[in-house]
Image (tube, rainbow, N blue to C red; front, side, top):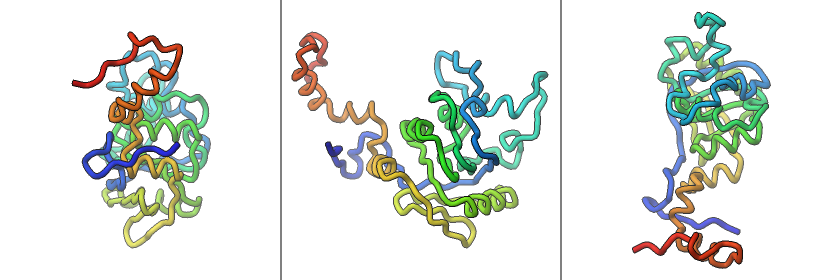
Length: 218
């Protein structure tokens, strides 16, 4: 079933066609969700404040002394484009991982590859997960390290990453690109924008009592 199309200003969520900003590299393959946000922080009632705990065990020792990590470096504070390597976000399906990154300030993640569930959880927050080949990603990480104040431009619709005078041919999963560009990545907002269709579907289901179906809008 195809999703409805919305004109400008009518989409239920912000259309994410492009992300610009400075980068922060986190190197290494198979960075799992427990490294991104340790399990003991999953007990939080809300996601508010989770950003300070992103990569916590990689950033601090047992006495809370800082360790060397890009998220601790002053030159990367304010960065919003995370540049990673292969199989980033593997491990558990915890949605706290992209929540922690987003609340630290990350608006897009660029890498060689991502765990499927992690990418899906990012999409639910409107965060693009953009892939490119290993050589291009490592070159971008080197550039960001040497030029932490330089802008990185991710064109989600055109599937390119631009920095300095370099343009990388990137890939955004078809379904993710469509959802971001058309502003239909927020499923809660999408259902709210289609309340009539939701009520109609609910009434067609024999196991949903009429009393449980939301009323028509005034």
